[in-house]
Length: 274
Image (spheres, rainbow, N blue to C red):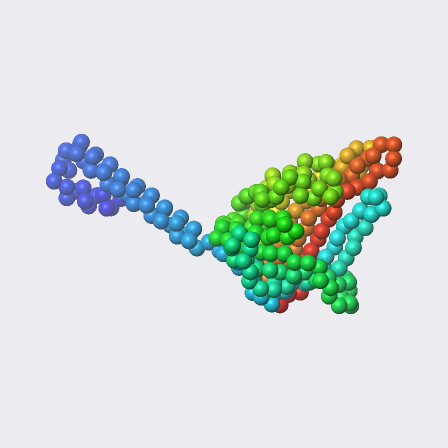
């Protein structure tokens, strides 16, 4: 308060209590206005310093990541659950222009046995389109908004909003979570983490969390419907996707016959990169 004491003492009307109060209020109003403008400027500066999403993608042609890939499938008309394991290599091929005229990147997938003894075989391709506010991945004509700005714990968005109803109709799902994926809510559940995968310590990891829901998932009641829905992605700075898990399956009790399951599960865990 020294500023007010000095300036008011020198004020020619300082003996008039009404004018004195007006002077105080006037100065307080100026201080509040200055603080408000400064705070707004500070927030704008912080917005301009947002961490770019490309820091977590490492989009340079020739870059690759190798994962352990575990694929859960239901065979024999859904009566037997099997886990098939592989090594998967994802390689950034080159810059492209997507079907909306935006710059992006084409990536190739390759598979080999889990022990890494056999040669790589081609397993398709997909595309990444980084935009000013998000990162889209397009595979099998399915477009998903994987990350958005700002990268902030608790930030949420509809990551599957571009998907049509029943994108995995081949499985004849009945759970609403598996039909209306466009309603799924994604969020940053953690930032700046250090994780350990396959004996490798990886710093600066962000986690994108999707739905995590279970209905009779342990099949404690074989006569009732069961369902499991789960999604999590982890991205490391200067590397890219280091971990991913997606689970979509349903258990049908099928009265009068054998119960069965439909759906799938995918788990990727990085084992190497360049």
